[in-house]
Length: 444
Image 1 (cartoon, one colour):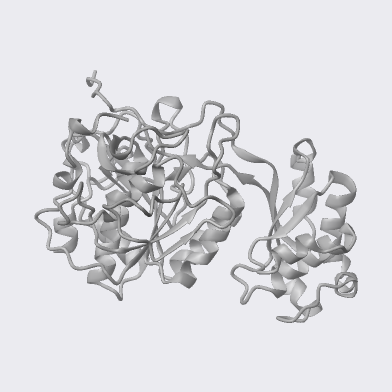
Image 2 (tube, helix red, strand yellow; image 1 turned 90 degrees about the vertical axis):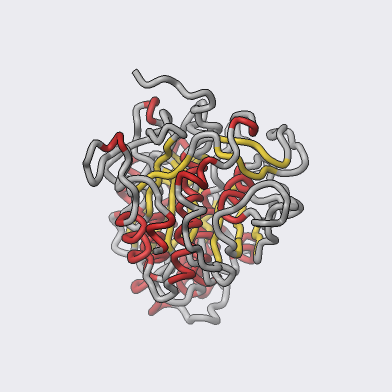
């Protein structure tokens, strides 16, 4: 039996009471081509007349939800007029139909058009209800909104000093400047006052405190881009620019922090408009989502390389975790200092490669919170910590090869990964993928 490494336990991970879906929320996508002939874009009025003009093939599904399932709200994900719709004094029948129209009329192009989140009493959401709504000729799909959680696991910082940099051959690599590359972090936020972190080029946390109360996003940011050679703290892998979306609430729900799924989906939709080259997703959850998969396909088509954590649930049944399991995502597992799989790191047929994930020293907020006592620097473990190693490598590759597509970048990361002894001569395994991230070879 492989000996247990002190600290080889994930810092965050599957909640104590894991849930597969967000209670009371359903993602609906209406067919844009069915709506556009009946609305005037981009100047559609928010009026009863516009609501009444929608044919029943479009309006009836939302009417059905209101009559039979206690529909509380129907929020178009990418309409800039969401707040205006919520404040409208129109009756619910008209307001909900207008929300359907706005989900298409207010969105340029069809790739994000038609997506909305319906809020319903949890007990009313049944397979039969989803099938009924999804079978409407004006609806592409209706599905439950999947839950996502953090994929990190803590240890004394003095146990190691960035062993991960040596493992990925950071010091041997000829690293280009990535100062012109933007990397997105969708996480718990960032401590913008930390002296070892660059100021983010944008930080979106509307309606939430700017503070990172958990510290997870700040830890991820340090692995990617802590300022090198400033005689402070640690060294980040890439000198890239950080763009941060806070997608977690400031308070836990029954003791656990889950992604605010509407914020998360909107953030995925916004990334291509902010010139993002790669996005770090140190999150995971058990359920597949058509809406989420659609947004990831769009990211790759628009030049964004998504990198996601395999998950920390190997010892809890080793379930498949999303978004790592989507075809368009670079999926990252974790290894320990022994160069063997971290005992928590999930495995599967979708894994691409592994990176250091046990006892990874990085930045955390300089002030304590009710949920985070350590300050400035701490070592944490998890596939959450492995993932930003690969995200930073993708940023360096994007800097070296600005004309490469996300698929070319991910192919290069896999093709240059180093074979590990535990792979026993195989070019790919379900525990290690193509092997360990090798920054020197990837950039050579």
